[in-house]
Image (tube, rainbow, N blue to C red; front, side, top):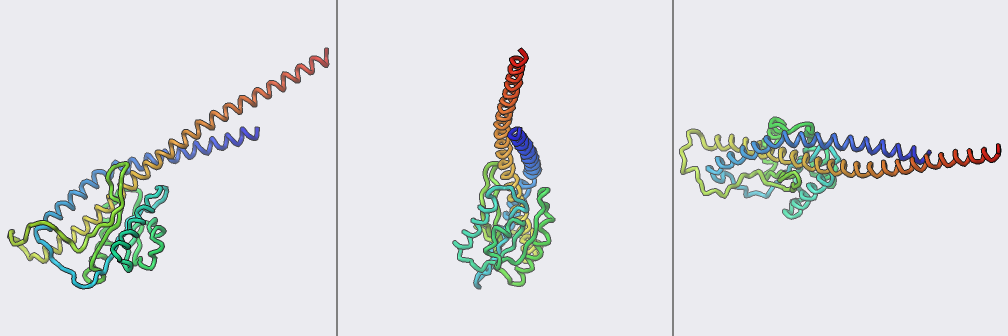
Amino acid sequence: MAKLGKLKRQIDLLREIQRITNTMKTISAARWRTGRSALEKARTFVEQLERVLSLFGPQKTYCESIKPLLIGLFPDRGLIGNFVTVLAQEIYRFLEDRQLPHTQIVILGSQGKRALSSLEKNVIAFHPLPVHRMPHYRDIRDILYTILRMEREGRFTHLYVGYMRYISVSEHKPCVEQILPYTTTSSFSGEEYLFLSDMESLYRSLLFEYVAGKLYEALAENFMSEQAARFILMDTATTHAREALDNLLLLYAKKRQEKITQELNEVTGAAEALRKFVG
């Protein structure tokens, strides 16, 4: 009976695990569905801003030594496989390839503090991220004002963002992308257009929206990648739990039948012994 009790506890545990993983899979699927539209809008918004900014051409050239600032976007919760590790490795690789050991780093998302622990001396700021919904545009406004103030003060010359780019439910890849200084390969020139306002002021206003748009787009890409990765992981975990549960239920039924058969044999043997004794 002790073995049956142990099997029963294992079955109950697997059923609870299956319930949790299935719930998490459903939540991730719902967040992924609500995030698709926001991601497409963010991509379109940035594309349109890039088209407008390309009319101005390059506006600023940095001759002094590079002072890089990198924003790393990470999840706020675990249970996401090697998602965080892969993204951190890409950031490490980028800094090594570009030979930027003294890069200032801003971490968004709690998992990034652990993943980039060896760069702790480079981290100048940390902010958690909301995980219960698709990020809103307003979520990056405060950090955006801080970043642009730092740029005006000359505290950095180049701005990069490291995040996980969403490709499909089953595919996403880590990347580190340059945001500032804005560069374009367009052949357009501001001289071909008539601007009815001060070009410098207009350019700064558009650049502000561009940086905001790029940061939000990166947040949306990272969020969608996270939800897709968690959905796949929880779906796999649910399947494995179901398979293990089926095997345990089969083993439980077999052991229970053996126990019943043993008890019947004992009763039959006792009855036979009693009959002989009485006879």
